[in-house]
Image (cartoon, rainbow, N blue to C red):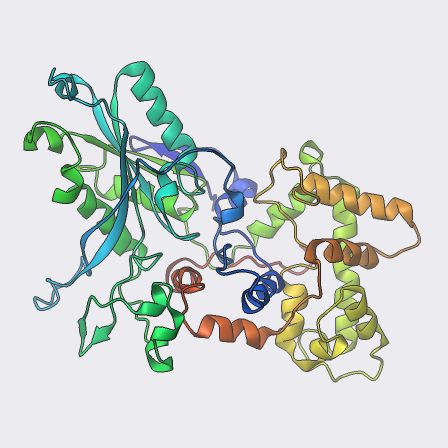
Length: 474
């Protein structure tokens, strides 16, 4: 089966990539040790929030620097239907507060009452929310969500073609502050738990565990979009002299990338009567549980000379991982309990080279710890976020491969595993945490820092998969 990421506009699908390119639209691979390092920084008081939502493709550190102001962006909410598919009359009245953002920055003001607004073509651009950092007013100025193509197009249509473009952004249910309440006697109440609003101490342990994801799905989210664009709250932003018929003819265009891009495309596909067009960037609209193609793409990128990779770079990465796995296999490897061999010198060496927190004992402690260590890769490979213009060390494929080749040339006698260990130490800046139980404990209790991550993890488990695996000998 061929998998595409595609751009959809006005209902037409334009395939822009082959199977090898599909990784660009998938949830970004994130190594569990990196997640554990961030958790530790939170506990140490070095970070107040996660900042990077680890299981999702959108990261706050991907936001370009800009002087754009959010002063003209309104932060609003409206009553969204909790269950669009309910057949139970008692549930039909249940709603929750869904946040949205609006600006009239690209709308000609009609203070002179010259009637021009009624004559200018009018469209509403809607940035679709999803996984990743919580939305805020920057969604309509400068953020990872939609602001590149959406705002540039709005500005061009407004300044060069005399269009009015109303900009909206709709936060996804169960993300950010658009959280349905807690079920109480089978009825959802609108009292949002404080720990999801930033006050972690306001909920006891039982309440913290009582997050009900019953109504979290892409199907509900697509219905949210269709309901919002038809809502009275959305239409009140159109300055059309209270002409309801004119408001109904404003053309809505949805925008999104990755999972929000999927929603953007599906909203046009399923609701063409209210969504005039859709821009869907790098969207893996065909879900796959075991997505081995992701890391196949990563391997391809490591050898792709056009972006700074090389065959030798990939060879060292492959060989270094093989050498590490051979050591793990010597103590019954990932499949055993870590106690299968008396010869633990290799494991001690491995733990020392990669600066594993707790040393080799951490690797011996459990199979899961060893999976954390090697399962997501011994080094971070920025294949998906590869930015040729970035300036930080190891920030793209070229930087990683250049560092690998430089290490090889500086000391030709060292093993590929030793080279990868040096790259890993450069990337981590500290010891490598492989404590799987700490990872489970973090996601086992909902907090303001991990609520978005938990929502996305639930969706991948319940709907999509997208789990990035490696086949033997691939």
